[in-house]
Length: 253
View (tube, rainbow, N blue to C red):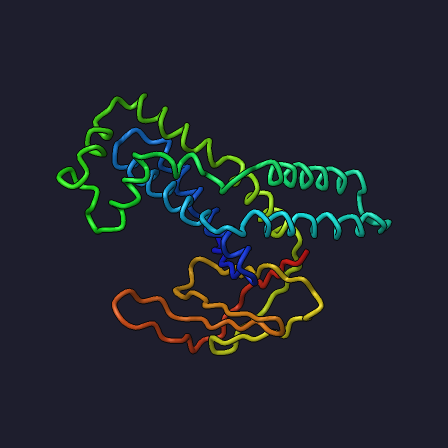
C-alpha cells in the first residue's frame, strides 16, 4: 500500500484541493444518522461556503477550463490521440463553462441567506460555541427526526453540486495529465529542476505506507524540493538521515 501526498503549484489548484477535502468530509458524515455526524457535515458546508466567498473564483475557473479546451484542441492533431475521447472531454468542459456563465452571484448564495446556517457560522468561530446553552436553535435541530435532518442536509448539499462537480472534473483532468518517475532522496533530501515552459499544476508523491516518514514539498516555477521527516507525535520532527525511494508524479496540462 502507498500514501499519495500532493502539492499544488498555483492558488486555484490549492483552493480546489481544499474543496475536495471538505466535500469528502461532507460526504462521509452526511450519510450517518447520528447528530454529531450532522454537526460535522454542517461544519463542512460552512467551510465550503467560506472558501466560495472569493469573488474571483468563477472567473478563474472559467479561464482555466478555456485553457484546458485550447490545449486539448491542439492535442487532437496528434496521430496518437483518440480524437473522439478528447472531444468528449472538451464537451464536458464546455458544459462546465456554460454553468459558470449562467450562474449569478457567488456559489452557494442561498446557503449564505439561510438564517440557521448563518447563525451556525458565527457559533463555530468560538470553541464549543454550538453547545446547547449557546445555540439552542441548533440543539433543537439536532433533536429533530433523522429523516427531517437528512432532508435539510441533502437540500443544502445540493446547492453545492455544481461547484463540487466542477472541482472534481478539474482535479481529475489534472491528475490524469501526469508523468511519473522513480526517485530517491539522499539522506531525506530531494530536488528536481522543472521546465518553466511546462504548465505544471500539481506535484504528487507516492510513498510506501510502512515507512515512518512523511514529505514536506515546496515548489516554484524552476524547481521542486522535498524534505523527508521522521514521524513522531511526541517530539519535534527531524529530517530523515536515510535514503528514501518514492515515485514522483508531475501533472501538467
